[in-house]
Image 1 (cartoon, rainbow, N blue to C red):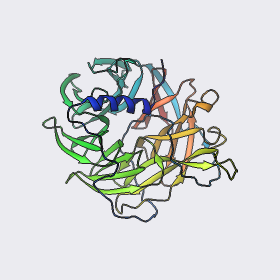
Image 2 (spheres, rainbow, N blue to C red):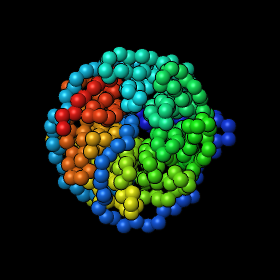
Image 3 (cartoon, rainbow, N blue to C red):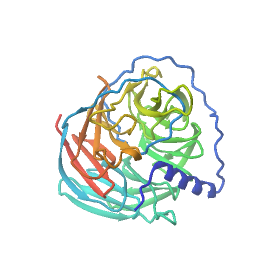
Image 4 (cartoon, rainbow, N blue to C red):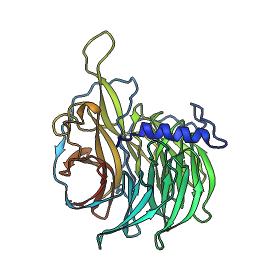
Length: 398
């Protein structure tokens, strides 16, 4: 089975979006412009939002900085307590309504795992799939009394009743990319540069908000909706009380495809090229350094980026990709992706924990031969799905 990256998915979504009625590609410039910001220190508090993660090694812009490698602190901050078989190609995991929910892209199903009974139920979603690969990227979140599954290729948002496990509504959203639930609504980013707001009371799209050329991940918390644009390198904040963009912060980096947030601000990881050739003439030899970027919700200020590990304990410099997958338990959590040159020799089962208060990053291996692709954190437990169709339960030790 060929491995799917976000570039693959974005291509599939673009094809589907171009066939959708009324779709027009977004212009490269955005309508809303944020006021200019200066750098300052971010204010960090407890983290509560849960997001899902898609690991991809990204193409980065020609921005070069000098940076010394940052060592990784490898430590067992949890222990694996169980592993359960999932459906084919799990593409998302979420925790809510007393269960762990796994969306499986290749077989178009949603699975419900009961952590207490350790039983798994399965729901057939009947969603559209790409004709050649039979792949339909699915994402799942829980909130507002329902489980929500976004079928990106099909351009459809499904509402599932967690009591009856039945699909109770199907909402058409062409060119859909990612979703989250919070602030009394379901929010969906779209390839045409907009965010759709869905009212759970009516299951209708009630607002369409222009955010940027290529919005990707989204995090919805009380009082703010944060959107990451990996193409523009921006973090955009929407005020859910007005459905208007109030801040658009440029980072100067090629950001990853996910964003985590709480009441105090938002976080994303980003990549900046570094020239390691030492030669004055082109072409340069560059590697990619990863940083954590954060925006303070109270001031809208971008904090100085915090470097993520490279070198011993993680992989050769420039071979890794750090993508935040979840926020909770006072930290940011994610999985480490690998460039093609490193996949054969680098540890593929690595997750990381980043402490926003100290800037410290710790990594941990799950002791598996397969790669962690998506994860969620809740109530002292980390749930990770892997590319060998497994759900791994990790009990956090501190």
